[in-house]
Image 1: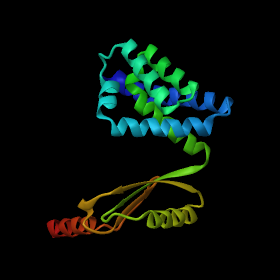
Image 2: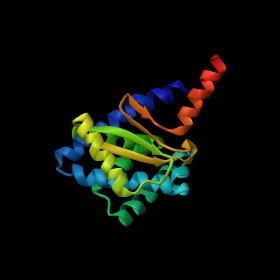
Image 3: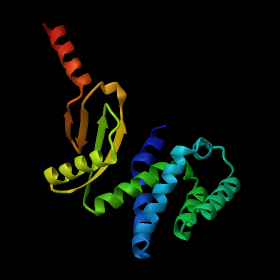
Image 4: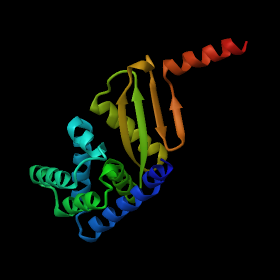
Length: 185
């Protein structure tokens, strides 16, 4: 089991870096990143596809047929299609989601973007999210790639995390702090 964790921690980044370098050399980086993002959305939206990826008993020929169908319907670049087939042949398709996430992170890092997480107790409009992104960009003097999540368990307020910096103004956190003070007293 630990060898799987080792693969997921190091080798997935190597595969992602290889895809990045191939995309960059062939001047297709932007298109490949968009298509990888679309594939990640497909993995999260389609339980069937997600289950197929995570099933270690999947037949290689069946996986290649699925990749070909997806490639045709999404008009995937041959670079991505061949990369996915390569993963199938190397019996690494099980890690494709993690490899694609690593690829998107590498693209973001190469552009100098900081990754940020935003959670809010109420649904934020795209204007509000853009204003928060702009403010974070000013404060951190770097481009921000914001991942937004609505979390009604926060009761009220926001949680913003940029790198190791976290600002938690949620009511849930404040109630937890009060509870901890009461326990200590």
